[in-house]
Length: 328
Image 1 (tube, one colour):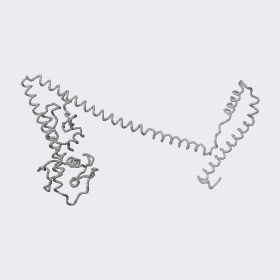
Image 2: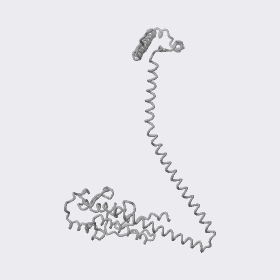
Image 3: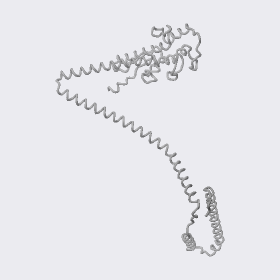
């Protein structure tokens, strides 16, 4: 018995060499068999009849010979089975990775569809809950009115309308306050920049007062601010663009501010449009306001689909009555 067994690496190399030698011997055996068949092929072809069962009998005999021979089995220490299993495993892994890659797009699409369906389901459930509450409130209201006299029902309805009017007045006041803050804090400077030949509202989100004082070039880009701007020229430009300066258009230094002037113009325009829409009483042709000139404020309202110009007169502007279709 060998007292010093060979290391695992040596045993593996020896087994690999033996497996390789076995395969080479098998290949050589098949080559010799193929050469023998090629030598006998001419003799067989000469002895075969032109037609009949000869070719089929030869094929049958070949299959029977192959079936009768024992299959090739490597020796017990061969690494060939492990190599074949490794190759099959590698092929399976590569095919699985390719399949996963091909299914990623379908998976993403299915996830997006699932998210959309979940959102739609949530919306439908909320709508169902709202409808159920509304139906129940109508039932309760109908039951309560059946117990009231006509005078009591009319008084109750009048009280409800008064409460709704107070609620709508409060909400309207909140909305107008929020609109004024939005104009003064965010929109006014951008409107002033567009009126002065700068970028359209939304293209330049941050506009400071120094840029408005310096103005914009023909390409709409801000010009370099001057250390001492010409105040007389600035005042003339303010009067030409926004009219005479007002008290609410002055900044902390006491000078007229471009952003404040543009904000004042926007507030006045929205107020005129709202008042005219109320006075029109549902008559869309009477809801137009006559503009002295086209301004950035008017263009912004039209781009935002809040207002629209008259189809045949670009100096007339009106608000879009969003609630009219619901009322009808």
